[in-house]
Amino acid sequence: MDIQIRHATADDEAAVVRLWREAGLVVSYNDPSRDFMFALAGDSSDVLVGIDNAHGVVGAVMVGHDGHRGWLYYVASDPARRGLGIGRRMIAAAEGWLKDRGVRKVQLMVRESNAAVVTFYQHLGYDVTPRVVMAKWIDEA
Ligand SMILES: CC(C)(COP(=O)(O)OP(=O)(O)OC[C@H]1O[C@@H](n2cnc3c(N)ncnc32)[C@H](O)[C@@H]1OP(=O)(O)O)[C@@H](O)C(=O)NCCC(=O)NCCS
Image 1: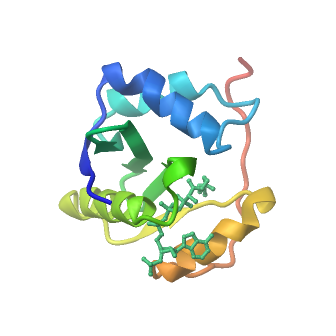
Image 2: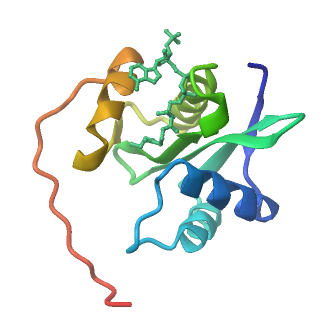
Image 3: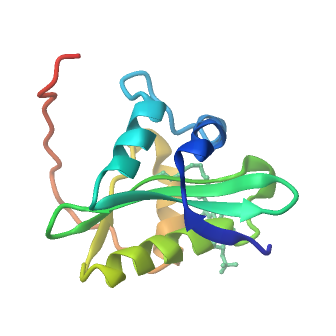
């Protein structure tokens, strides 16, 4: 499927959030609009969108780095257009974004409830790397 990939702008927020919802990526403790705008506001983070002329935003990925590793979040393709290469293109674009900034390794987290997607990432050359991820909310809001 022929798509153009570009940086998201604030005008893309509604379409991207809709896609993330349709892809089942939005959970109660995350505000996807806030997450989208926060990623666009940072120097070391971004949202890339895949655009199909007829259907608008059909792919999205949040990408960023913390000064060491690159991270991917909110990887999604249009549920009506799966298996057409959108996901692969979005991942490649995000990897290119990181490489352009000197990042050597990219990482991502998969929720245990979404284990089926692990094979998609393995298909694209990602390995499961045994780590314990620890987390703490530091903003009660
Ligand atoms: C994961 C997701 C982005 C894949 O998008 P997609 O557009 O269907 O992926 P592609 O068509 O680019 O597939 C790329 C390759 O992976 C393969 N693939 C796709 N989904 C796969 C899966 N679940 N398991 C194994 N392989 C898979 C495809 O066959 C394709 O292989 P090929 O390029 O050798 O022909 C999409 O299914 C999605 O949005 N899922 C819901 C959101 C989600 O779980 N995101 C990840 C959060 S960690």
